[in-house]
Picture (cartoon, rainbow, N blue to C red):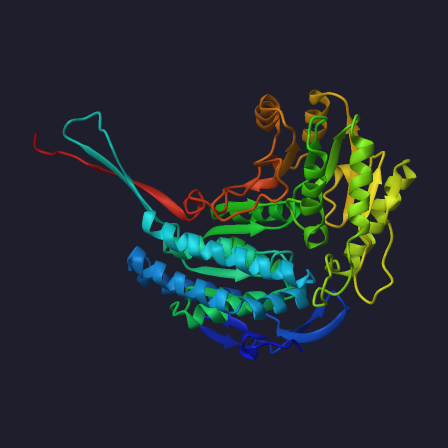
Length: 487
């Protein structure tokens, strides 16, 4: 078990209508620690019936919440935020044990996730409408924003706290109720958040957490139930496409934060050391398991050798191990399948004449470890160029002109994040505007923040999370025309 200051934060039941409940069948499923591959807890195994019940409870709870003032909703959200901050250490330990990332990264995620709650608590009070000048002197035109309705949120395992708060916080701030299905690999972080929301005084039914091994059944209920008016999903592009099809019959509002394949472009005038630091931060955070990770390092040929040498030196300095141990800089991958995929990507690249600079194999530790890897002489026909890697592999390829760099960067269906390093202001604007991505980091490898809009274009999704724009996805804009006003 996990050593916690507050052991009551470790929950193993479903959270529905403000109560901790077993699954209707009484079944449970194991949660494994990726650092050891050992089962350390069993969790209630929910399904369609529990999901439907949670949706019905959300529908019943929402009217009173919708009628509450923005300040009342904000005060509860702020209380939730404070409780999360106060329990950062316990939440981080839960996260590290079930997900694998080093404890310092887990603590940073807890803070990052809490920041979304604080941000949207304030934004709840700024959900403004407009008065629009009318073309008829006897009419007045106004707009107001109302909650979209019951929200379903499906979240991934790589950021099991932050991916929940950046969906639930704006939904609650707008006056909606939410049913969350976390990944079955990492349900404990979601349960801990729910317990703290309960302690913060969030009314029953507004935030439920249902998880189970039959993910297709739960996902189908969330995406087809007529009561659900909005579906927010973070995950793979293939699953996102299936969910989009499922929501079509009930014409739900959707947010889709899907896969990425981020180009990391370093021009010949860049500060090379700054670019290497940016690559390390972007590529190897969470063992490369983030959707905005630098996926393809596209380096100008004039500096490619120096960049590669400096990067390899940094990568060889990474300490691999259990995220709970001190001084660990990179933890395990989520499961054995992920490790096997990394080996397959490396083998494919080497078979097509890539050069292995460092790493490239599993690590002799009990758990799902793969050595941080750098590949050079990479070409577009390789899987590491075409696929989202989602692991600690940094493939390097070169270019000679700005046009070549942009063409390589855009040669993918994905369009989430991108990065460019250059000292030229002209190039910053020209390249940033030509990149087919929703996010561009300029001379910066860490780009996520609650104040900035997060989301992609092309096959990377729909909608934006965070920032002042993030609340719009949980509202409907209503136009009211007041006529026959006495002149």
